[in-house]
Image (tube, rainbow, N blue to C red; front, side):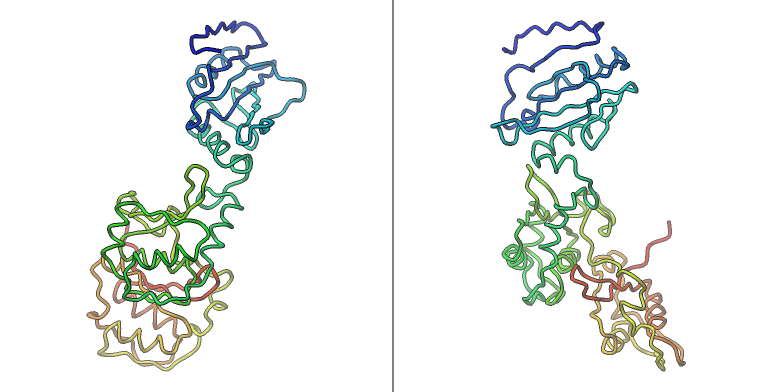
Length: 356
């Protein structure tokens, strides 16, 4: 059919029409690989059917058809025979003006979500559109692919090395590509790492190395391909690097804290007087069986310098956690027990949240 095809529509009929939207759109348009067929149940409002058509006619679909639903018909997706990557989608328009597709239901005001659904189908296949999604909007299969990269151990030294060189080595380790925003690329080229992440898993290591430079990374999907995306936090309007928009430096251990790092609850005789926070932490670190990592970005933002802050703790018998909590709070800091992707325990030191 040509583009000048005249489309005659009788909206008073219960059975609608076949409307192929001209020649198939260019292959560059993901939705051009989708043929959408909407089955309307007899009790659905005729004007609602017309409104759906008006919403969908300019979506650059490969085809659009409205017809009466067959008895007992339900939504479905099938790949077109002999055309891998091209799909026929059957949706059911209900009496309450909702379009039911496989694994999702949309109202007319949900058009952005509806487009994302069809785009995922075109780029990621049936599972990509219909499988349940969790963290970062990934399916379980996609998350496992990401995690299989990030659980790998960093076996090379990182401290005082150019960040751009470390990214190259991580790229060689990973199965999935690492993509870097242009603004982030500039920061990587001019900065050196101040942390030693050898022995940590790659996910936590990369998150810590990037964080000091105001950078972060997250899983991303572009044209159906999964990747690790490095970006500048400020450029993406993210005020909280630990938010779900980026991969966090480790996470809380499962179960009780006492089980993750039991030495924190061992009793000791202690007195701290006349020492800086850095000196006190160095002395405690020698006794605690876990690395200490600093959230340098948060400390810099609050202008906190542990090597300049004097701390004290009165003489007495107590346990390690209480000592750490006390001396860190004197510098407006806090400590958290975290684990990396492989289960390695570490102690994360960051700034306390500012009062709302």
